[in-house]
Image (tube, rainbow, N blue to C red):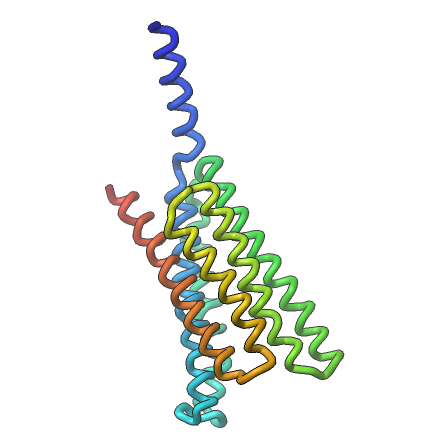
Length: 209
């Protein structure tokens, strides 16, 4: 009986060692998602307001809307990477989650080149509009894998949100571009910035506790 109890304790200790140390990785991912979702979500909403002639579509304001979010995010991302460079990678679960989201990010970068090249060759800006649709699909897959690993209901809802966004963008891409921009902007805030903030805050609270 004692040997069975000890074996159960050893198994439990092993399982804990697999998933321990995920706070650092979650903090990095959460902080990056918070800024990316907030900046690019705001950019899409500003483009939507440009379609409504509420925000200027030309001049310095339009240039700032087009360029500043990317410049700001690149600076912030460099700071995050430098700040977190010496943090421990965490256990197996944390590394798996990190690999999923990093893989999705790399795939998005590769597809950005593919769509940019194709749009330039075909001289069709409409082809570039499919890149956010692919990004949404990759995000849905990444969050679904995170749900499978962590089994938290809210993560599953985020995954569903991205899949719904993928379909909605695919439907509206041939219609009013204003709806396309509005849907994408809201999705980036609700399905990236807010979940990122939740993960980031939880990781900081866990580290402080």
